[in-house]
Image (tube, rainbow, N blue to C red; front, side, top):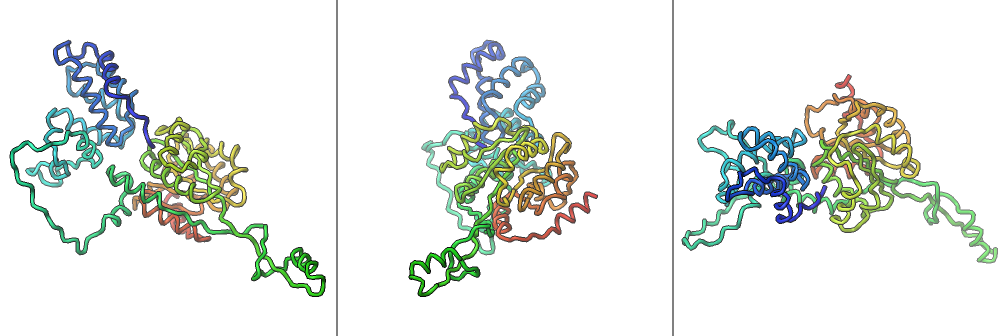
Length: 433
């Protein structure tokens, strides 16, 4: 989800000097620590951590309170401010030790790639792998190096034989959203924007005229007979109208779903602008209807409006409470005419699945088809051990993963088929039992 822009450096640095008046001892280099903390926050933000101006100011105040007497205290002070989820610890730890170990390190990282950050004297199994988004963030902050007049020769062009190798597009299809770099995420977003969702068409109660229809249209036949003067009665035929059912998307935006929910929002924008009767709801601790915001043609404008409308990004998850609000306030409007429901969540519920089973049963009975999309299913040994997952699994018609472009393409194919194979669901239920 796009973050609010950090204020310009001048305004934030003035706030830093006000928050840290004495942290540097009032020397001629006073204010450097505040500027470095601000620069460090921008690196973390570029690496994917949700670091906004409020957290930067909190970091200034925390450092002022704790002081700079001990490096370990300084580490945990910034850790307490900038890290709020378990999966952010590795990125923060690597960024801290790279950024604060040597202030000139960024200037020397002109060709920052993975092998340059691994000590060649260490065995491969002991070398620590740096996060790709962190490497890209550090590389993006370094100044451009111009020609220093040294007359160094350019490296010769290297030609790589690509026989029996995977293309970049194929690799991108199978790559997890969580492991993509910034450039790969941009490519994935462009691929998602071109996706179409061919939901199967179902017959309705209304009819339309058709020469090859199986039923006689009595009204049209009588009108035709009156026009011909009654000498002959040409029979007119009709058949049922067919159209795709409404699509309802319920997407989890809690902290554990942060990276995937951002990409899924691009997918929901693409399908909302591709067809009618698409209803989108986001939930964390509360339910928010964002259908009208996703109808804007420009994806950046649409997601900015969604960001302004939703207040519980990257927080906890109350699945049962959110489904109760949907069933109570929106189900009669959104689930008409046999809607297909996509429930996108990892099943981790802060309320220990309180009331969840009753609400998912009601939701399942109100829709034509209920499909649960869980990014945790990308693991081969995944088992529904959480209470939320155990409550959801017996009442869904299909259980699929949603963690890369290929899984989204498979979802589009699955929605064109009226029947599903519940082998995986039965296997999961047996494992949970």
